[in-house]
Image (tube, rainbow, N blue to C red; front, side, top):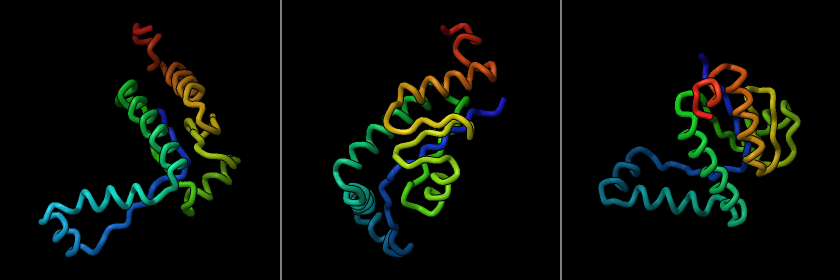
Length: 134
């Protein structure tokens, strides 16, 4: 069975990479990871960064619970693709979770997103009740 696809449209931190030579030099002196972490931390205001951290925690938990049965893709709402996905799915607030291109959950109601994922998995026959885990 194919995995349930989950697209998350959210404001995401953007990290710009330096030229290949600078990246090698930064890595050589142990600065690369620290520079990228600092850039990611400065990419969003504190409130959006906290929202993104909650979203990230939810995505990691989702992937652990449904290993191999879900495919998650995060799209930055401020990107061209994010603007297109927002128009396509009628999303005006973020984060927005789109399950299999059909169900959309707008806002940080991750419990509702979990229910939508569980329902989609059950319809495919890979939910916990079909595997005897309920």
